[in-house]
Length: 298
Image 1 (tube, rainbow, N blue to C red):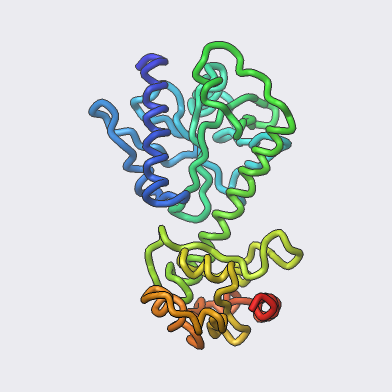
Image 2 (image 1 turned 90 degrees about the vertical axis):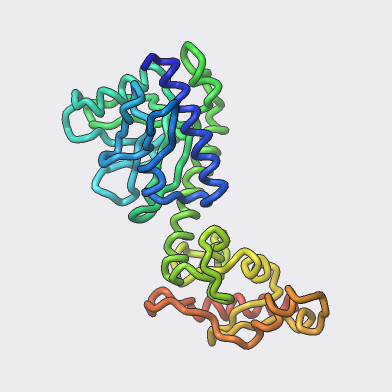
């Protein structure tokens, strides 16, 4: 396949990923990515056994995968992702392929494995540097597709803007990883109503992550459906330090149809569903801090 055909596959992959995120949410299952999509009668998987992946239909690698805390020393370095070579040979075909993608300004997909079988997709990214002495590539996580799909060298971007985008990417990875850990601890169900549809579940912070005690640990989180997450954040309801739900008095006295009755009022004084592991259960001191805010809001 020529370069133009290769680019059409990539654009189709980006479109397909956008569709999957609309259905499944930001974090996608590996089985879906391994199956991929059909392009002009050929199957195009998006991941393979190795981190640098090139499907048969493509001329250059289509995706790279990083595992935070994994066996490779991948890390955000300055404004870019420092991505390790495959192995120690710069001439390995995977490394050669990624180097060719860099020289051609080819857009790629970056997958971040948040836990086994669950991946966050970020695209487009581009390889912008090659450091054989340290067996690593530099990957721009703020690549602009309009620049990458045009001939010539990509335009230089303002460094402040790039720092902002890179920081936003890191926050996105951090937030999705927190969500995955919390929802897994609560056995993929809402702690309040037991709803099990992952697409409708969030990880709610007990103490906001912007605050001093807002650590991204499971004990500072609750798995909540979107209705109860919104109610929790708006102080319509809370969870007391004894793990019991309390609904605000004004809500209990309000009449507003069956959703209010079943969705909120009937939850009053009910226990929440707890993680099996004691270390993952909501921190009582954080719940007390939240409860005092709830009382002031009431």
